[in-house]
Image 1: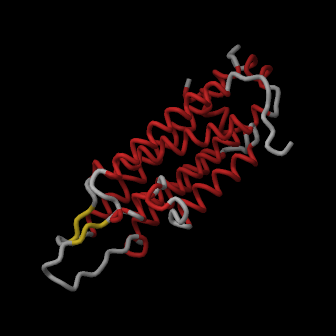
Image 2: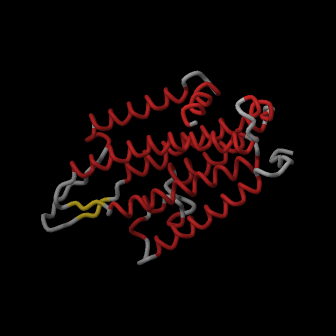
Length: 245
């Protein structure tokens, strides 16, 4: 089943698109490993008694920002065509599935591919950090890194799906998520949202009080669950909300 739908997606937008993405992600991972000193910056320690806690921002930026955003845009394009084309005929032609089931299967395949490439990238960069860090520099605990990353992924994916099913427009959805996630959270480093941003654990890590960061992440997790529920409800509606009209 997975192989069948993978072949459909691989030919839907352009031929062998998913193979090209897999190749590029693996290529970037190889380049990162070969030129690790240029990719990962380790601060110099002048005081021999000082111990530094290092935030693995390269893991977050590569995996949780750029790789995640790439696959969010893929989701927009793969699912967005369903709002413009007659998907009833296509769904029947591939086995009689209803539209929502067909969209869910497409989404599942994209997410499986994303998390496979995410795992490879995460392990690659994390092991580089461990190999390069001197004894006086401590990395953020692995369980914290994984928790913050999981919350970020769940929230951004659920927010992206909500925006897509609300607008039912690929261009509008891409513009909104790019403006919020790439520009405000990523490039501007939470300039507006600051420590309350979804990427606040990267740029505002030292500004949190005890337990505050955990509470913020739990809030985003609950918000993500709400967005998933609302997206499910939106997927059942018959009308289209038009942002432009």
